[in-house]
Structures are given as structure tokens and as C-alpha cells.
Image 1: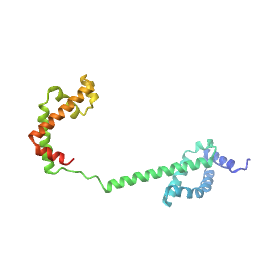
Image 2: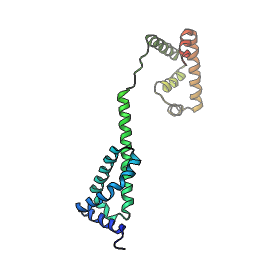
Image 3: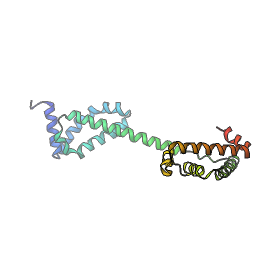
Image 4: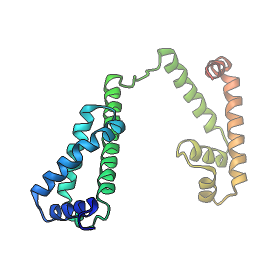
Length: 195
């Protein structure tokens, strides 16, 4: 039992945990070649293999104090390799996304002069219609659209039921649509033509 490979590996890990660089070198030489095909399968390139294995053995050395408590040395090392391969692939994916963003930055869309005028005129007509709403209806509409509050929030704030707030919003929207239809039917057509 004392000469079993598992015992030898545990002994090597215990020596590494004590800071034995020769034991670490032996572990490196023992596992480096064995792990290459496994890492290549996970990561997909020879360059990745070298980088991942370097990081694996660096972590094993940096966290060597934990090695004294490892019962399954091979399983531990494979877990470290798997985790490091996963980390490598995540970093690579993030870098690729950043490269994509740099290569193709999002294009800002500026409204055409016609769109700008239609929008400005529509906002003016809506403001005009809102100012003509009954006070309670106007207050609820402004809380909904300008403060971006939801129906339950408005109801709670004004101590009204959700249905009352909803009915007032429906009423406000109906009055605004009618005002837009009367004052600028062509404008209304332009707005809804795009939807």
C-alpha cells in the first residue's frame, strides 16, 4: 500500500504544501504531458494549452498549503485544469465581444428634420391636450407619463383604487387622441403610419 501511485501522489502534494520545489517540479513533469490532450480538447488550441497549464501550475503553487488536505490528487488537478480552462474560455469570449464592439460601434440614429418637426409638433399638441384635461385626470396622466409611475404606485400615492387610476388614464388617452385627430389629422396619420 505504501508504494501505490495514490500514496506517492499524496506524499508529493504534502511535500509541495511544505514548499518543496523539487516535488513541485516532479508533479509538473508528471502531469504536464498527461494533461495536454485534455486541455486541448477543452480549449481548442495549442496556444491555449500552454497558457492554461501555466496558470494551473501557478495556482497549484500559490495555493500549495491546501494540497496537504487533498485526498484525490489526480481529481484535484483535473478540477483545477477544468476550472482554469473555463476561465480562459470566458476571458476569450469577453475579449472577442469587446473587439466586436470596438470594430462595429453602435451607430447613433439621428432623426431627420421631418421627424424632428413632427415630434416637436406632436409634443406641443399633446401638452395642449393634457392642459385641457380635468385636474384629477391631468395629475394622474402626468404621474404616469412624466414621473413614469405605475398604476399601483399612483393609486397608493393619491389614495385611490387601481381601477380609478386606470379609468382616468384611459379617459386621458381618449381625450388626447381626439384632440390630435381634430387639430392635426395629417400629423396623426404620419405618427401611426410608422407603426
